Every structure is written in C-alpha cells, then in structure tokens.
Image (tube, rainbow, N blue to C red; front, side):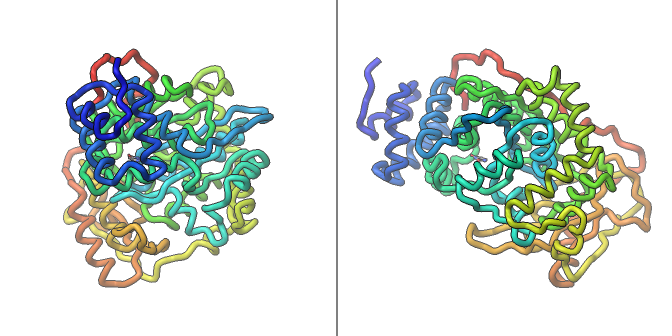
Length: 450
Ligand code: URA
C-alpha cells in the first residue's frame, strides 16, 4: 500500500473513507504532539474519523501512537501486577475510591490516574480535592514511590502522560467530534496504557446519567475498548452498568467522600456501591491472576472491604499524599459542609419508577459542584444526599433527596429541578439490574468502527 507523509494527503485519505497505515497515523500523532499539525488540520482529521470511522487495527495504531507521545511508566521489580479501573463517568460515581484500596489490599499495584468532572458527570479528582492537604498532582516520581510503598494512589492526569490526547481532546471539544467511538477509545486507552498497566477493568455506563445514554452504543464502546486494549497488549475486561440513577445516596464532592468513608467503615451497606465495586474488583483480580475466577475475586474483595482492611489502606493512601493521618476515623470533621440544606419532597407518595439522572448531575453543576468553564473553581460542599433509587417507595413525608447549597435561593432552585427528575408510580416498577453485561475480547468485524 502507498503511504503518504504529507499531512493533508493522509487527512484526504481518511476523508475518502480509506484505511490509514500505522506509520501514517504515527506521523499525524507526532504532528499533534510537536505542534507541526495545525489546529485546523487536527479538526479536519477528527471530523474525517468521526464520519468514516476507523478499523480496529487503525484504532490500535492511534492508541499506541498517542500512548507513545509522552512518558510511559515502568514498574520493574514489583511483586504483583499493575492494575487500574476506569469509568466512563456518571452521577455519584465514587467507585474508584473503594476499588483502589481493595485491589491494593488484594496484592495489586494501582496507579489510578483520574480525571476532573466532565459536563454533568462528576470527577474522582474533584472529590479527592475536598480532603484537606491531599495532593492530587504529585510528580510522577512521587506517584510511583507511593504506589510501590502503599499499593495505590489516586491522582490527577499530568502533562507528561499521553500529551497528544490533551490537544486532540481540546480540539474535539470545539469541533463537535467528541462522540466518536474510535476517538473515545484511543483517548481513554492511551492514557491508561501510559500507566504501564498489566490489567484494566472498565465500567462503561449507559442510561440517563451516562455520557452515552443508549445501551447499544455504550456496549459498542465497551466492546471496542476491550478489543483495542487486547490489540495493544493489555488484558481488559468491561462491565456495562446502568446509570439511570444516582450511584449510592450522594452526588457532590465532599458528600461523596463521606459516603465512601461510611462504606469503608462498614457503617453503610449501600448495595449498589458494594455490588458494582466488588464485581469490578473480581474481574480485575481474576484477569490479573490474583484470584481463580471473577466470583472468587469478588468474594475476596468483599472480605477485604468488610474486614476494615480497605479502610486502613485508604487512610494510608490519604496520609501519604498529604491528607490527615486520622482521616478515616474523623472524616466528618475534615470535610467541608454546605450551610443550607433543603429537602426535596415528592409531589405525591409512590414508587420511584425512573430518574432522569442527567438532571441530578446538572443540578449539582448549577449548585457549583462542577465546572461550566474549564478554569472555574468548584464548591466541594454542595450536592445531594439521601437520594432515592428506582424501585424504592417514598411516602409523602419523606424526601426524594436533600440539597446541600451555599445559599438558600440556590437550594430552592435545585430542589425544583430535582423533583422534576423523579417519575413516580403507584405500582412497584420492574427494576433493571445494576450490571447488564460483562465483555471480554471478541473478533471484531473488519469494517470501520464509527
Ligand atoms: N473520556 C476521555 O478520557 N476521553 C474521551 O474522549 C471521552 C471520555
């Protein structure tokens, strides 16, 4: 096959629906990283990929080239596998804070590099920023030292890992090309591969609060990620999980950290949080040969959680990264609290039939718990607690949720939004399980992934 090394010629080939060679893709990614590819060329390329898709092989080549655009962490001499979990994001999604210490306690090393909130979904990093003193931006050296010593560290993205993704993502964001399965896959996996992982477990969400609400589209993304990771040489498993709800009872940064601490201390037995996090751990532990099967891995994860060992590990991670040494014991005294609380009452008693979870996310955003512009400061205190779940009965005196706000007027406004997000019925509705499917690598059809 003829290879073209002139950027506009390669872009033209993608525009015309042809398959690019790995060398051509690497050339474009080099141009993305060193700035020789102009913004308008990057935008045109992203649109050509958005419209015409990429084959699995092209997506693997794009992922590898983006991984190689920066530093790749090396982990020689560890006595266990390097494992991570990634979620496509949701409302109240605090699972990473449970999963990292559980996996570390089961013998894995977890360099969990997480993102900030995106749109209506919250970000793990914003949650950790509510812990006083916790350094979410350590150097890569410090991150590696802590992971080697403690077994896990949850920190923020750095410019050293997969810098090509940072530029491509920023341009996709303003050229209506974010929702492209090959581009999303390469974006997520290039950053994860740069962590030097052996195993990745993905939580791909569908439903009203998810970034891709349609189940078929989310499943296609999950399958593509698993297959491309396999092609790039790491073992990846994915769960397709339902995000038509708030995960746990809280949404909002400090409130979510407090809920995690109450699960780690076994004061809360919040079923969705425990079920999904231990299921993801089970998959990861089996894939990393730390358990004989996903079921055995899940059982081990549950024991570690219930014994309090995951809590201890979380506490050690917090103090190693500069947070309080007694955070697990005294989280309530360290986490900031909003001055106003407002109960959201149902307009009539009944069962919660459905929730437009996106509205819950947008309410937290408008309270100041997320960002409308990338440089905006967020208020860690605000959000929702006591959020009801689909299938639960709510009587007339019981709130659907409690709004935590910095001002009374904001609380009232958010409460009206939240009430409208709940659909109530008289009869008990059928409720979908939290986990719809598990995905392992398959042979993909040869055609383009679009
Ligand atoms: N998250 C990412 O990191 N990249 C995308 O493209 C979408 C979600």
